[in-house]
Image 1 (cartoon, helix red, strand yellow):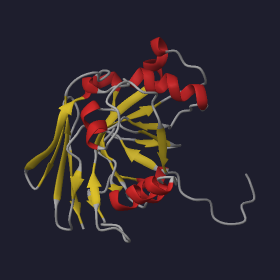
Image 2: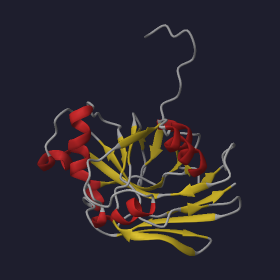
Image 3: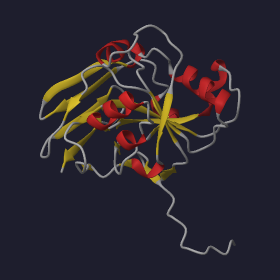
Amino acid sequence: MPDFVIPPPPVVALPVAGGGSFPVRRVFCIGRNYAAHAVEMGGDPNRESPFFFQKNPNNLDPSGEFPYPPHSSDVHHEVELAVALKSGGVNITVGRALDHVWGYAPSLDMTRRDLQNEAKKLGRPWEISKAFERSGPIGLLQAAAQVGHLDRGRIELKVNGEVRQAGDINQMIWKVPEMIAYLSEYFELAPGDIILSGTPSGVGPVSRGDRMEVSIEGLQGFAVKVV
């Protein structure tokens, strides 16, 4: 065993429907992957090359609570389909990409929008707005062997019972197999990698005390309280 000079950090793991845990290695997030959301964020709705940023593994949080972060007064919800990989590699073909998927979960990419907008103006990275503590609320992972590979189905977010975001995952500009193939050209993907696959239009702010309800057709939904 290695002789660690400090205690090693715990393995980040997500709960799985039916029992067990899924260890998380890395978290890749695609930006502007639904045309209507690209428009509302000032982007081009056409099929431009995909771009990705990262969250940290321990940003993913299944607790059902989202602590409102410091240094922001404009924190937005972004509902997304999370894709969990069971294997990886480089230069994965689109046709074989789904062979590497273990399962799926509904999730949120919470964003300090004011800090993100400032970073964009200055040409700086987004991590301060995206990769903060508990910025990735997530539901139960469900195995593709049980739920199938999701290529269509309603994706929805309610805040205090009001629908804020709604769309269909077949509206993704870059589909799940294409995201996996593209990422594998630039990174060596591996078991435990997670991909957050983008959000439909309707992103907006939340406040302390709000209750967010996340649902994706074919998966078990979840709720998150802003505290």
